[in-house]
Image (cartoon, rainbow, N blue to C red; front, side):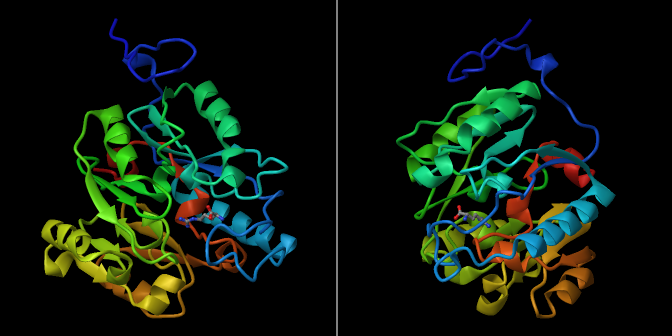
Length: 298
Ligand code: ARG
C-alpha cells in the first residue's frame, strides 16, 4: 500500500487509492448567513463597512448556487460567526487528485476560517498538505491549475508569498510559474487571470509586472488571449467559474459575455454586487474539488 507522509499532517496516513475521487464537476460553497464587511483588508472593502444587504447577498448567493448546481455537484459548508469572509471559500485551499493544500491566510481576520475548512476537508477524506504560517498562501485565490492540470500558475506580491509557491507545488510534484501582482485592487490571481478550458487565458494585463506578463504571453498565443479592460476587471470579470465550456460570472456591464461566446463558451451572468463590496465574485465563492480534467470533461 503506498502512503504519503512528508509534510502531510492528516491525523492518519491514507493510502492514495482511498482519496476522494469525483467523476463529475464538484464544488464546495459556504453558506452566507454570517457574510458582511466587518473590516478592511482589500481596497474594495473600504467604504463598504456593513453595507452589504443581508437579504440581497443571500438571494445572489442562492442564484449562484442554483446556476452552479445546474452543471456541477455542490457540497456545502456552514459559515461561522466571527468569520464573515468564509463565504469566499475558494481561498481555503487548492485541491487536485484528492490532495488539499490548506491555506495560511495572510490576515488574522481570515485565519479564523482555517480550522473549519481543515475539519471539512479532512472529514471528506482529502489528504491535507500543510503550508507554513510564515509564508502566506491563499488557496485558489492565488494558485490556479490550468484546465489540463498540467500547469500551475501562482501569484505573489499582495497576499500569497513567493516562498510558498514551491512548497504548494510540491504537494503534486509539479512545476510552478510565479507571477507578480502589482495593483492592490487585483490582490489575488483570480481577480485578474483565469486559464480557461478552451486553452484561452482571460486576464487583465495591468495587474502584472512586465516579466510576469511575458510569462503569460509566452504560454498563450495572441489568438488565445482574452484581454479585459480595466473597467471590466474592476467588475471582477476574471473571477469566473469555468466548467467545460460553461462560464458563470458576475455581471460586467460590457460585451465580455459576447466576446466569450464568440470563443465557444456558454456564459451565465449572475449579479454579485453585494460580494463585490467584500472584494470577491463568482470564482471566490466556490472551491473546485474535482480534478481539473474531470471539471472540464477532458
Ligand atoms: N474579503 C475577502 C478578502 O479580502 C474577499 C476575497 C475575495 N477574493 C477574490 N479573489 N475574489 O480576502
